[in-house]
Image (cartoon, rainbow, N blue to C red; front, side):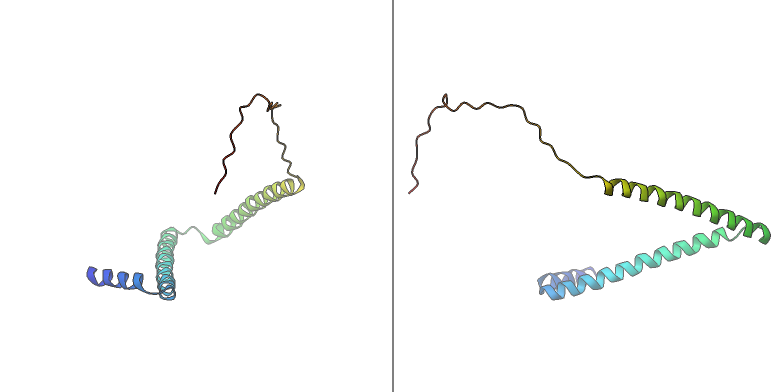
Length: 119
């Protein structure tokens, strides 16, 4: 089994670029489907465990409404904060200032370098 996989990998390595891209897409898609499937199974089991203890229906609707209003308040506050930060950043202009120390170059005291001609 491992030899077959190794041969297949070596065969793909030696093939042209279009074949390599094809197998990249196939294996990436397969991996994505597996990960999403495992995630969905995990979410299903988590929601099934939550549903084991069911409260009274009347209280459930009130609790859902209060949770919904809490979520709306949280998300609206977050969106207001993000919008304020974006407006703050969009309104400012960036300035770059380079501050250097005063440099005084005196070329007279330097030794002369002989000129070398390149053939």
